[in-house]
Every structure is written in structure tokens, then in C-alpha cells.
Length: 264
Ligand SMILES: NC(=O)c1ccc[n+]([C@@H]2O[C@H](COP(=O)([O-])OP(=O)(O)OC[C@H]3O[C@@H](n4cnc5c(N)ncnc54)[C@H](O)[C@@H]3O)[C@@H](O)[C@H]2O)c1
Image 1 (cartoon, rainbow, N blue to C red):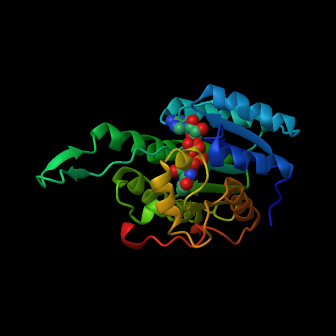
Image 2 (cartoon, rainbow, N blue to C red):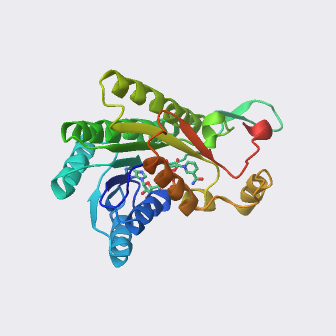
């Protein structure tokens, strides 16, 4: 079992939502954190919160779609703490829309998901994760670090209507742990650096709470535990996946029994 005490976590999207909650969990358990986010004001608040808990924290403004920013982030973690033990690339966005929408009266297509809506989600949720993980993995390997790369998929990866961009990016997160685990196994580092993904259902963060009440009620009617997942519950799962070295290459759902029905 690995210990979180003195372990170093690099968390993108660490300025808010689940990313910040993982940082809190890490600090509560004696770990050190590097939080990265594209929004400087979120980062500032997050850093202040973590420091008030006694945390050893570095915050880095980083747009995960930039190769240069991701390289600088990984370097900053090594410069400050000398190692990386957990990589949690949790920066992500949604831009929901039907691929094609039809007019109720004419039955003809009256709206389409734009290329920008599609690309923005792929750039951050898929390419951004690739860059973050590649740059951090390089430093972990070269500095002899031990630990976990913990990606974030979603129940959306199973195919939710209105999310062809998001669902595609999250389906990719479900296969990446297998690819990375196989590559590290081939190179004889699978026993040192593991890779998994968590796949949450609906978590109570800005991403979900921004929905209108009607959509939220509809979602909750399909969740047997009758409420949103708490960000702290996802953070605790990430902590367990880190500690338990038997867990590698797989996707771990956390959705309160969500029944996707005809939507997925
Ligand atoms: N909330 C949910 O229900 C849910 C469910 C399943 C999966 N997820 C995934 O968990 C992750 C975190 O979601 P959340 O609910 O905490 O979202 P959130 O919106 O609360 O937080 C996301 C953070 O990512 C940052 N970010 C956005 N674009 C960025 C970029 N280009 N570079 C760096 N940072 C950027 C934002 O500033 C924000 O602080 C996402 O990948 C999301 O897809 C969320």
C-alpha cells in the first residue's frame, strides 16, 4: 500500500470542483499539492484554502491545451518538490448540444453542434489530458518516482444524448488506462507507475449545479441514492486507488447506482 503522507500530487482543474476537493483530501492526509488551472482567480482562492489547512501548496496557471504550459507545470512540480506521485488531470469542460436538432413542426434540421463546440471539448478533455499525462509521466520516469496517474472518465462515456463531444472525450479516458498500463508494462515500469480512471456520475460541482432545476430533477430521478455524488466522495475514491497498488489499468465507476435508461 502506498502512503499519501509526503507524496506529491499534480492536479489540473485544481482551482475548483473535484480537482480542488482532491487537493483538500491530499493535504488532509499529509500530502503536498501542485494545483493547476486556467483561471488565476480560482487558483488564488484554492491556494489560500489549502494553505489555511496547513498544506504545502504550489499553484501554477496552466492552460492544459498548451504543450508548453504542461511541460512547465511538470517542471515546476519537480523543481519545488523533487518528485510527482499522483497525476490527476481533472481540468474539463462541457458544451452540450445535440449533434443535429430538428424543428418540431417541419421535422427538418434547424440546428447543429458547431465545430467549435466539438473541438473545444476535445482540446481540453482529451488533448489536454494527453499533454498533462505525457509531460508528468516523463518526469516521473526520469526521476524514479512511484505512484498513480488517475484520469477522469464519466458515465457520459457510455453515450449520453446531447454530449457527442463530451462522451467521445470521456470514452477516450476509459481506454487510456489500458494503453498506458500496457506501455509501462512493456518498458518494465508498470510496477512503479500505475494508471486508472474514475468514472463519476453526476457530481455536485459548478459543472452540474449550473443546470436548470428541471434537468437536475430529471437526472436525480434516475439515481437510486437520490442525490448528487459529493466531490469529497470522488476524492476519497482517488485516494483509495492511489493507496491500493493492486489496482491498475481499469475504470472505477462512482455514480450512486445511476440508471442511464434510454439516455445512455
Ligand atoms: N461534475 C460532474 O458531474 C462530473 C462527472 C463526471 C466527470 N467529471 C469530470 O471531472 C472533471 C472535473 O469536473 P468538475 O465538475 O470539477 O468541473 P468544474 O467546472 O467544477 O472544474 C473544472 C476546472 O477545470 C478548469 N479548466 C477548464 N479548462 C481548463 C484548461 N483549458 N486548462 C486548465 N484548467 C481548465 C476550470 O477553470 C475549473 O476550475 C472534468 O474532467 C469532468 O468532465 C465531472
